[in-house]
Amino acid sequence: MRSRRRPVIWLFIGVLLVVGAIRLIGEHKPGAAGVLGFAGGVTILVQTGKLISRTRTLRGRPRLAARRGWTYRAEDAALPASTRLEQFLRAAPPAFAVVAGTANGVEFVVFDQTRDIGGHDTFYLARLPRPLPVGRVSIADGRLIGGDIGTPEVAALFTRDLLQRIEQALPGCGYVVTGEWVNTPVTALLSPRPREIEQRIDAMTRVAALLSDAADELTSAG
Image (cartoon, rainbow, N blue to C red; front, side, top):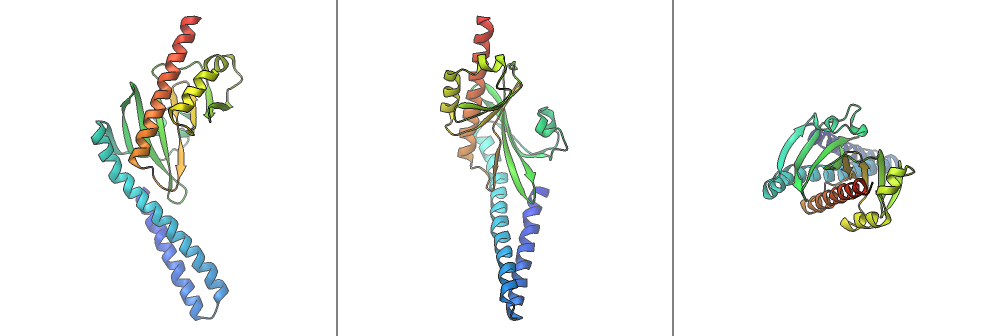
């Protein structure tokens, strides 16, 4: 898989840099050797972490899906664009290590995408049972921090009580809410462990259910 080859290639480059540093030491060029050795050491450390992390992902997620009765796909090139989220519409890399299923009565999908020189992002998406009358809203630490936060629809839906309940679902977790999805993207060097994945799935699906119930109450009141 391409996502696993990149760290291996950069790991090899790191080894070459270290070898070059050793040769420079033999040529009595300590300054250049130090720079080259530092670059090689950092490259080896970072890429080893990425390789270990990716291996853990590709082994751990199928087991997680099987244990919870969810589905697993090693790769799905069409998935990102099928969400119709703007961030995935422009030449989005294929999704890999895809876990999908239902939790708290809400459909979800978790997947990774390869970025830059071998890093990856993990995306957690919960499909709202019914689309919300909002555009795009960002939430963090129990408050609205961006998006269409000045509209009457957002003000009516995202009350202080609802925002507090969202924060209680998983303290410190950020969310991006669109009309159809609750999205919790995570950019990290190391892949999330199964326990962390389960926690985020539980949180975002509970948040999706809270938002859906709040929207229903608004509709009934109106």
